[in-house]
Image (cartoon, rainbow, N blue to C red; front, side):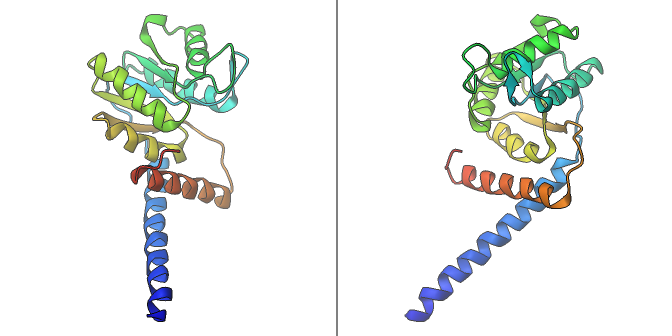
Length: 195
């Protein structure tokens, strides 16, 4: 009996490590795959904003979405993200303001202003899309983030094409850490633990 006390946890640990290794490899592949094609809407995942101005990360996501919009790949852009503690602005409102200042008609910009996490934003975005009869989207975020967010939208019945924003080069260990974090986050989400 004592042997099983050690063997069972060891087998379980090896299984979890193997799952995370495989998942990390899938996240790595997705992080550089640009699947952008004709869709009903471009969904931009929120990121920090500073008193009504997009952070560099949010700006890069919005610029990429704008490029896809100007290429005619989708007639609308859906910006996501709640207040993140800012009493005056939400990430999605900052996104709308930024895109409008670059010539996108306000009527082409849809807001999801409640999400405080990727899970909340993707669920709310899918609900908005359902109500507007939008079935396909191009998902814009950082490359390491696309896999998890794409699966969350797909679980809501949306057809998703990932399109990572251009990003600065990170050293390999920093990049791997981001992929592993996303693998753990996705693994927890897939068993019902919302983070």
